Each structure stands twice: as structure tokens, then as C-alpha cells.
Image 1 (cartoon, rainbow, N blue to C red):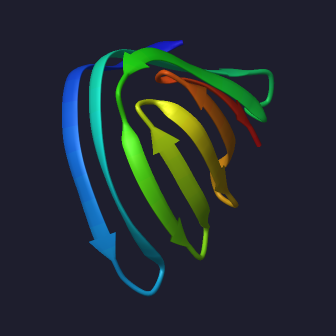
Image 2: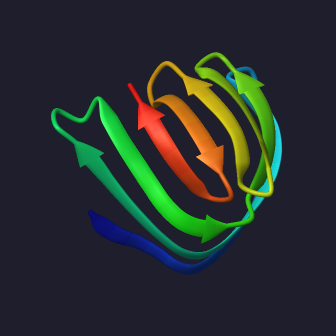
Length: 88
């Protein structure tokens, strides 16, 4: 696992033909890692990210770090308060 973010804050707003959405992310700490041949991974952290969006690659619905992301390129993310199980 790699430490990827510490004390991170970001605002997102995008509208275009490939993706339309908006969101906010505040992260205290975040680790990311993969298991085996990178088809299953995990993100462990404490975050309050909120995002709603849809595009050609997939869709995301998250409120205060809890939600679901489905993406052709990034797989399926099941998230609970900033920690995620990533499949794909």
C-alpha cells in the first residue's frame, strides 16, 4: 500500500460531452493498494467526499464518503465514509 494523500481538499465541477458532474473532497489521510493482479483493490482513509456525476465511462453517486462508482476504466467502487473496496 502507498500513502497517496494527507490533508487534501478539492472542488470539482465539469460539464462536457464525456462527463457532467460536481463534487467536493476533503481527505484527512488516504492509502491505496491492490491485491493480486490489480483486479481487486482497496482505499482506506477518512474522507468526506461528495460527488454526483455521469458520463460515457460510468457514473458516481457519493455523499459524505459513502456511495458507489461504476466505471469502465476504473471498475466498481463500493465506499463507506471514505474507505472503498475496488473491483475491476
